[in-house]
Image (cartoon, rainbow, N blue to C red; front, top):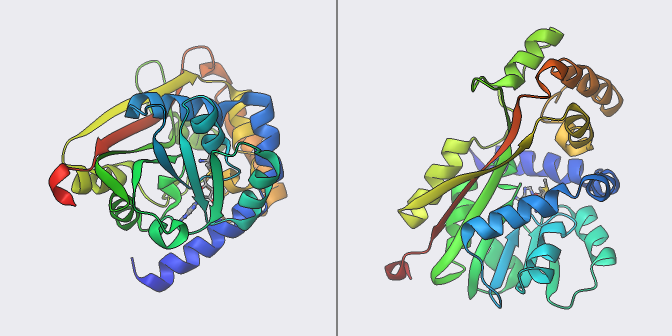
Length: 269
Ligand SMILES: C[S@@+](CC[C@H](N)C(=O)[O-])C[C@H]1O[C@@H](n2cnc3c(N)ncnc32)[C@H](O)[C@@H]1O
């Protein structure tokens, strides 16, 4: 992807999240979801107490606050959206958490540091157009052997393993966007492998709840991944219809977030 296109995408992403912080916090208060996903990712990746952690795409700092408060880490979060960061700074009082506006593709420029023990992307890697470049820049900020990992965009998986996003769009007679994420899972995984060699994969999942999905995809920035061409009011209506179509699967299907983690090889420094 050329630089101009990546810059344009990042502007749109920052604008979308600048409009999302209130809805984002409201969603989290109700579901506690991003905190749960952070716990799953941090445990999967093997974070330990006292580690110095870079939280890439920290948003309002929900992930940063969990890493500090529950895992005893010192956390520097960076995010493209000044609105998300400002909201996080108002909310988080933990002195172990610092939130900065910055691009995950240039973490050293934002933080001025290259001595992190771990770097995590909780629900952010798939929104970054140059994910491989970002992963390489994040690994360059790690001590040798440092941990790097991400959690990915949700997949909807039926009882027989069928992919249910496609099914929902078909049932609603709406076109599914060609790409729901800016970077795909395999691309992000390949980027991680290019920095770490061996990578472990896992998942975090919960039973499919249409009410949860409606709330999750009614956050302005999340709704853009499903109905990029509509304005926000129309998107909200379509989100409700889309997931109502999956009501028959709500007992049997799952929402799955893939996890992946690796380490900076000792010789890479
Ligand atoms: C779904 S939110 C996740 C926030 C946080 N990690 C959490 O667990 O609550 C994704 C965040 O990634 C940020 N983001 C997207 N692209 C970015 C980039 N290139 N650099 C920094 N942040 C980025 C967005 O602004 C957004 O706040």
